[in-house]
Image 1: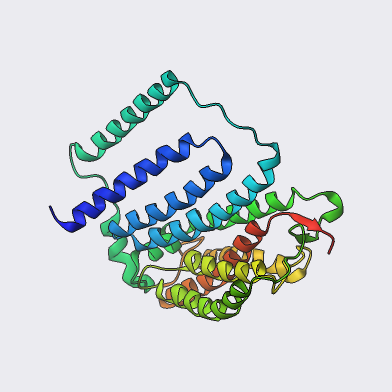
Image 2: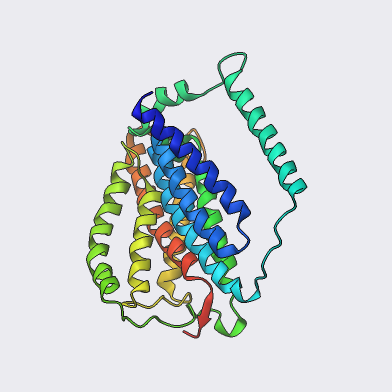
Length: 311
């Protein structure tokens, strides 16, 4: 048995064991912490499957940003939280049996198919050179499934609007967070001054290399958001008031630019969200660049929460 196989088996056992532990947790905060660790383990699993794009997205968004939002929510709900009664043995056994049946059915569909699964991979790879994209994932998401990618960005914007709508009327347009954090932790302040310049360079690199290697707008935007949040957590900068024009512009410019580029396709033979071969790569990189900015600002404001102070 090879060392890689042993490591993969251990990773599978860790993922399954942590999943059971999260479901068995009686309080929200330990369950959310387990969820964050679960996302990081899934990122390792995706790396073992050679899916670098999915691994980075899982670590940055699925575990990082989502985990931070859930932690903030669990802290807010803690005063009203009550200890959950453990489920009975019969209910646990029923849940275990149903989960086993679903797992066996999925395994059967994957392992005992009658023929090769239908796929459009060959057609996608054949037309990727016309887009100038060496990374097949970026090419598929921004060209063949561009409408899905656009709607994902719109969903992020709607999620931010939903969080903002939780603010009280007198604080609408105000500043997220209960109070500005006063800088007291020397180590955190040092990291908040040292890491952001490095993080910005890494984010730009991740965005640029996404045309040929794993990376892209979501991953680069998540890194920028993390650097911004680090500065706010250290107390070096306060969260901006959501009524500021530059905030509104940053959160909407990405989807707006994507729609504008898509509408220009009506002037071409192929219609909405079509790219002429001669300028396909510059258009895609331009859209990804603007989306990176919007994603970074939206993710940062999602973690900051609803306005709780007057501007």
